[in-house]
Structures are given as structure tokens and as C-alpha cells.
Length: 316
Ligand SMILES: NC(=O)c1ccc[n+]([C@@H]2O[C@H](COP(=O)([O-])OP(=O)(O)OC[C@H]3O[C@@H](n4cnc5c(N)ncnc54)[C@H](OP(=O)(O)O)[C@@H]3O)[C@@H](O)[C@H]2O)c1
Image 1 (cartoon, rainbow, N blue to C red):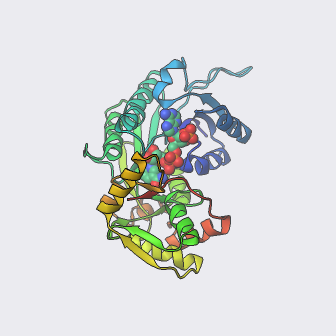
Image 2 (cartoon, rainbow, N blue to C red):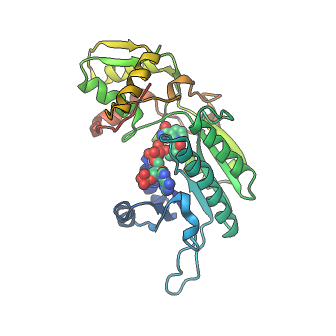
Image 3 (tube, rainbow, N blue to C red):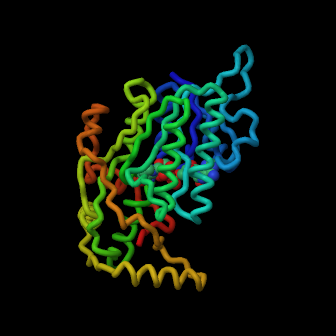
């Protein structure tokens, strides 16, 4: 059982991770940005620090709660860092993902934290043209150069109930007259179930075997975007036409509509320009001793729970 400070508790992965950490007996102090979300976390049994990753220094000791009656102060031993943004201006992405991480690491070191786990992406790279991938790479460098023990989990796209990637495809497959694929549809993914990511995080924080390592994890299948769309249609038992939209023209149209104040479900970006694959499909089995869920199992779980309508989430 550890004292854990968690950022990103209210996001897709965080919402799955919080109950799992509590269930294992860990004590959780979470960063939350709104009183409403803080209330939900408190109801689950977490302590909450209201604040923003970009301005953590406004709280004198965000990682150390006030002592309870009869107890000494209980500083966090482990930081699990999930908070981040992947959309928005390059300045927002940098302030949140890079400067926010730098501030968190500085405070963690000053407050005697032993270890940090950072959820990164397989697309992280020293590639300034893609602000998100570059920001995550820079955040990784900050963590690696710190005095903290670290585990960095670089994930392919994470899927499961509440995700926007598969959720978006399923929503489109159900409700749109045709299913558009922007570009060739040949970008490769290795979708990993959020359930498996949570299990990897639980193991990584409870053993020093994972200390000072960067582990790249993905699910058991390497699939093109088009294969994922086909699998989603099959899981829904829907026979619908799939059409390919030229990427350049789609992006031009989306940008033109945005300038006119019209929001579309498409987000221009680099997401579909690069493969999202981990180096080895067996790493999860070899390193974590887990049998990762296949896409079909994840699709079945999402469909059984009801597909929510995701926000703007179709990349082009
Ligand atoms: N999902 C994937 O496929 C995937 C794949 C690889 C890596 N990752 C990385 O894994 C992490 C978690 O992913 P996710 O899918 O759970 O992301 P998500 O659903 O977008 O959630 C992001 C979380 O970060 C919080 N956050 C954003 N800006 C913040 C700020 N300035 N201060 C404090 N909190 C802030 C959000 O809080 P609010 O609720 O207040 O917005 C939310 O809790 C992210 O860093 C992401 O880059 C995700």
C-alpha cells in the first residue's frame, strides 16, 4: 500500500485507474481542476487538491496532505502522472505537458517522493513539427533527468469503455449514413485495452523491477485504421459503406469551416500521419505476465456498456 499523488484522475485512463488503486488499498490524493470533479473523486474515497498542473506552485504542498488527528504528515511516495492535453494550441500543449511536468517533478523531488510513473505515447519523439508528440518526449526527458526513480509507459492508442478513439468509430458506424476514412486508412495501430494499461500501472508501481525503464506497450494485434473500422462494424453487426476521403482536401475543408465558426467532428492533426505501434507485441506478456485483451473483446465490452457520444474526435 502506498501514498499516491495522481494527476489526470478525471480523464479516460484515470477514471479506470482510480477504483483499481483504491481497491488495492493505496491512499490517493488526486489533482482535479473543478469542484464538481473533486466531489466525485471524494465520493470514491480520494483526497483532492483543487488546482491546475500549470500552476501547481500556488499550493504550498500539493503532494502532502494535512496530517489527520493522531497521524503525522503523509507525503506521497509515488506520483502517477496522467494529466496532459493532446489538442489545442502548441503553446497550451507545451505549458501543460512540458512546463506542468517540470513543475510537478520539481515539487515531487522537494517533497521526498520516491518514484514517478508517467503515461507516455509510442508517438513521443524529438519531432517539433508535431506539438503533442514533441511535448511528451520533452516531458520524458525531464523525468529521466530528475533524481526520482521513474517508469515511463509508452502506450499505443488506449481503448475501452469511455475512450474517444473506438467510441468515435462506433458512434459513426451506428449513426452516420456512411463511414468515412480520411486518407488511405493504412496507418497502423496496436490498440491496448485500458484494463491492461491499468494492470501494467499497478504492477509498475509495486515493484522495483520496472524502475528507471521506458517500456513500450501495445495490445496483441497490429491493425490498420481501416481494419479497426471493419472490426467495429462487424462487432455492431452493421453492414455500411466505408468511403475514403482525400486527406488534404478534408483538412482544407475542415479548416475553412472552422474559420467560418462551424465546428466539425474532425480534428486536423498528426494522429493519422504516423504509425502507433509498440516495438514488440509480446512485451506485455513477457514483462508484466498479462494476456492482453484483443480488440474484439474490447469492442464487446464497449458495446455492452452502451456507446457514449464522444466529442470532436475524428482525426484527419
Ligand atoms: N488515451 C490514449 O490513447 C493515450 C495513449 C498514449 C498516451 N496517453 C497519455 O496518457 C495520459 C492519459 O490519457 P487519457 O486518455 O486519460 O487523457 P484524457 O482523457 O484527455 O484526460 C486528460 C486528463 O488530464 C487532465 N488535465 C489536462 N490539463 C490539465 C491541467 N492543466 N491541469 C490539471 N489536469 C489537467 C484532465 O483534467 P480535466 O478532467 O479537468 O480535463 C484529465 O484528467 C495523457 O497524458 C495522454 O497523453 C493516452
